[in-house]
Length: 492
Image 1 (tube, rainbow, N blue to C red):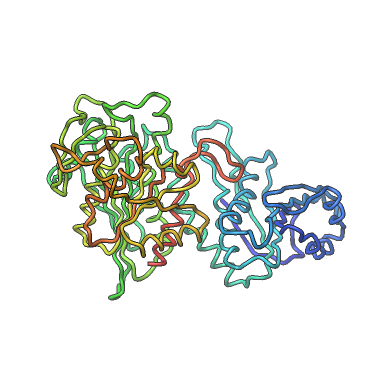
Image 2 (image 1 turned 120 degrees about the vertical axis):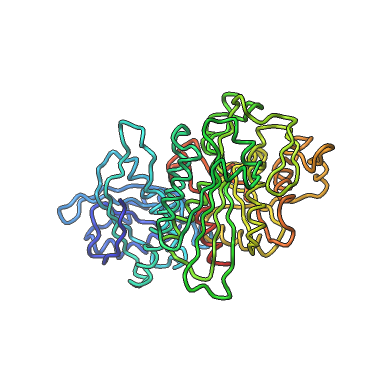
């Protein structure tokens, strides 16, 4: 458990982190005075300047105590942004998790000139770094109780407590998302995902309905059923609702839709073995939606009604699996020609989108680890954003930037639409060309959206999961987009 408290400068502990702007060494004179020892000269002689993510350590003896001073560069003040501050403070707590030292507490000495809005991101960063998925390791990471004492005189006690409480609430959701995506696929089957949703619905103002085989077939949600019927683990459709009491006329109804493919082998269009690795993360969109609802349970925002829709399936090559050349007619009544059973996410999402249409929501956002093409286009750090509405697009981009997550708008290009036209059905589930794959997948989804509803699709295939240690957060699920969506809901 991580706890963050505000303290006076005189009570700094023996393990001290000092984030520092480039060229701002003289600001450390107050800390020198408090510790009763000079160290600025040592930093200068070591050549430390404060470049972004530049690090140096000084072990000194002060007041008969061995003190470890850890300096981290913030870079030039005008260049410091939300993403950078978030990563720097994530590094602080993650370095403790990976450290062999059994530190129980640390102190952070903030620069006096740090922007107050960036302070909030720094606290979220501390919670972000304090995470590790070591459930199946015999040798555990260092996640025992850890207390951080913060010296930040530029924020008052009320502001500080609000920042900490908000960060804790948000990370109850982000870390749930990480746990779900990191879990092994034989455990996290569709029914298990539904159980987590029911658990969240025990919270205040949240309800959950789970549709099994009988209800899915009765509602003719055959996009979900046909994709999932090849697995022994039957599909589920999850409908979460957050509705605060005392709703006003200003209340906006929003649908968050998450792709919930708990494992993707590709089905009969079987993936190569190497491409199947990490496909436990193909329910990243669903994990994100559940994480948002976990945070909503704590945050309890007003004047907003949120519907979380999750089509949960396994895409397996069983004897009853759907096949290339099949025609799928889902909830919308529109028909889909199956070209490739590995383009399954968009098929199950088509039913969830039609479900949202019938709810008559004011806005809908779907999230999916949908295409490798988006990862090729934007890399591992940035999500692709598609939208039929400029205002919704702008809100999502503003929200993502404000929390230090990267989204980039990609086009819905009408010249590519013929690539998903079918000669025997209304639409094909895979384009006739490999070019523009992220766009044609998004346009497939758009085909099912009510044209009167503002809609955005976020392809999180790149940033949702990392396989290598980045030095400031644990490998595996990043919990990407949970914080962006929470901010978006506050903007709506």
